Length: 341
Image (cartoon, rainbow, N blue to C red; front, side, top):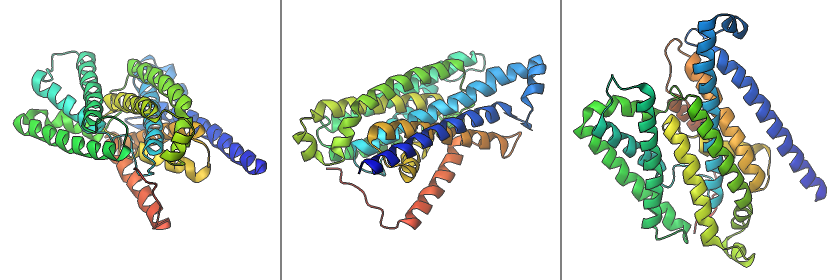
């Protein structure tokens, strides 16, 4: 048994180092990919205007893609452990539709004037998306009457998602001028991420990672069943509430900066588990690193495939993530799911 545990720890360590090296390599590639394809960074830095493009646009966009993917990967690992279901994703509690509703309301009420400064518009939409995500999670908690029953939380999340999604569609029907801006948000994009957004996501990632790591024993206990977790003396209601707060903060921050990006939070923990079986403390960190690498790679492909045009990164992650899940179902047609009661 000690040899098995040592082998598992070694695999997790190797995977973590590999993901960090991949992130470094993808960061360099991302800084070199522009509207005309790949550039030589040495030549770009020799030209002041090209160097400004690299430093002010490409580098923060690439780092922002890593930050958003890392937050979604962290959220996915927490959601799957909390609900004891490998099909749980970060948007399960209605944060995605809440963000969409917040952005739609902001666009319909205040509009986007061509004379307004870009950073001011972006800041307002980011705040609206974050408030909408957190508000949707709070509404889900209110509808579920707390965090005592995960099944009620799941059902409440589905109901909140349907209702808020319908309200968003209604706003777009009443104010059709917001459709184009909403389309960019709902398809996901890292094109507007700047240094301020990178700093914000980094701070939130550090806070959420620390909190999730401290709460990881709760997820280990829940994986054995609620009765076992209670027998271990864990105050589940309070700890569940703390985990949901981490989930809402990480997801809301990522969605507010990049829009709706599908499958990253769902696929990242699966990919980690396929390589290394580990406790939730290591799983959360590795899933976060995996999510960052996945979104960085998708962002580079979105910029490069049809350059000088660009694919919405959310569409690319949906296609690739959906293909991965189909392959996973084909390989394991009777993939088990743990209970959520």
